[in-house]
Image (tube, rainbow over all chains, first blue to last red; front, side):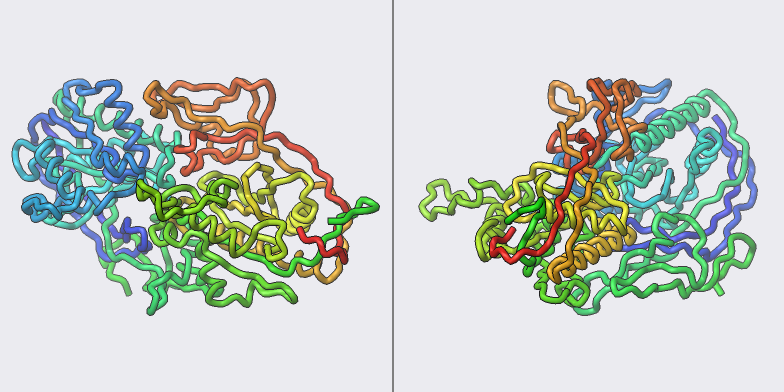
Length: 319
Length: 313
């Protein structure tokens, strides 16, 4: 029951899921982790898989329905809870009913008193915290996987908070097993107490974010990809639980730099440009100084004025 | 319309409306109409009054398809004639979209009346990989067929004949794939260019240009195919990866059609080759529609020119 540490190289990208925001890729620092001794952890015996945290992200919704229909509660030696996180949003096929459930999981919000005016999603967050948490306690599930979709061309992406050895090893394992798919990772550099999304409730956790898929649509190719990834995660858990050692190594991840909004009319707030067709669908690709970002409705191209991007090397500060 | 010598003659098309936001989360039309409402220079043509109009403002504000009921299914004769009775004991109000349909019919129609607009473009997006599709009601719609032939000379377009119950002289424009709530630049620009050519056509027609007879290939709607469902009405399979994104490509008997959540393939059992479209449109899950089947047909459009007949469209 051991796992060696990984050394991690991090360079940055920008990521934000808000509907009104855009993405920018900008490297800002290079981070390396010194090699350490090997590390041991106890068995991971309780796992929660969640879908429908956003009610119109259909891969997770249909996957939970299928797993629950098949009454899956154990995979190998691991006990599994399958959770439909936001049933009311799922029913109306909307992202949320009153407030975004996936912003409700900070320590402060989870401990806030419930009144008549508490939004549905906050109540639900506290219910989920009691069911598969509580966050930060030893009763929390060992691993929480939360399945999401995006309309962006992000492919398969793991999103996680801390430098979590499990997530990094699982990432490495997925990359080795899913060779026809690019598996990436985004690390959110936020302390767990302030971490606002569902996967922070488990002792370990990550979101699986997959796109592109429109809201309200389930694509078979995306579904099959996520199913394969989840199957591999459980294979990894089996190996880990049966005593395998996972060698140290390196993985690349992306971290958030900045959120870029659309150009807007300063009076009405309406957007005045669309993402340029040369940027559209080019998630995780290098954005150079001078590259187009937006095409305004009046026909002007808005270009990237930030400095050119350097991929690797010690000095990664933007020039 | 008066016709002799196999020529279709229409009086000038003076008033044109461009509808956006009939579904509030289909962003190309919403954005174009808002743009042209602020500055309509791009849509103006000689002797044509072109009016941009948001048909479902409440749905646009919430970025949702509709508020109470689908506006694009609300233009039924019953809805258009029904009245809100103050003495309704249950205190029920008409659905928002029914009231909107009545309002729109008042402003832009009704078809056949002297006040009616001559041409209405209704802008839509779809999550399906349909490219640019023009939707027409009737196979004898020579004006629309000639307009489509004109636009096709400059764009790669598909034509779909459906039976929407629309009361105007109607040209639906459907462009995809685009997710709901998202604005893609290429989709937006494609729709913009098509409308530019459509308005150019109207201007040429009004100036007296004659359009010779032409043939137009269309896809005629056959049937709507639902997802496989269980006894509780829940979907138990997805559009198969081999069919996904293959709008307008032939689907033969025996081809994969659906894939269940545990990986089994369900094959198309029809008697002949069909051409599916509206494959995996997000809004149609609730309408029990995974895709629709069509067959290819060639329609003949008569010579078209402006006539002195006062009869309008």
